[in-house]
Image 1: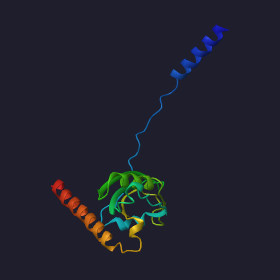
Image 2: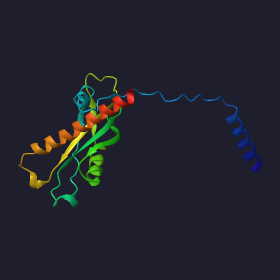
Image 3: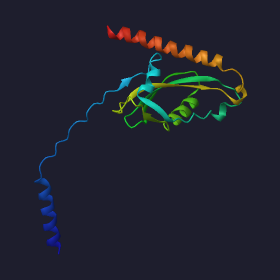
Image 4: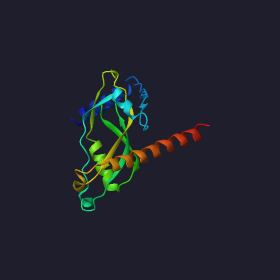
Length: 167
């Protein structure tokens, strides 16, 4: 009986080594459209429409402090409409807010816009403003203006650095 199993195992091993080699092709690089700059982020909706976008949870440890601020996150929307990579470009709040933001973004889903029949991946950015319940009812216009100014600063710095590195 041992001889039978030994012979069967040997035949199996020899048949594996006699098979033809399998060609492994490198993954094709996918072109990603970058609309993450402050001036182009509105173009995201030409490619992807929001489907499921839960908001980040305000970290309870900061509730009594009444902390307000904003975060700007670059997000890669893959060809299936899910977020794939995140890069926090600008934040005026502690790391706990950033963690909450990423946790929420990981649940986001998009559906392709009618003009995106090829399901093209897009690098975009999403901005979040944080304020507490004690700020409800008050105008968040000052916070919004502050965040917009910070984001424009980031966009201007990026353009300046792009110009420096492009020469």
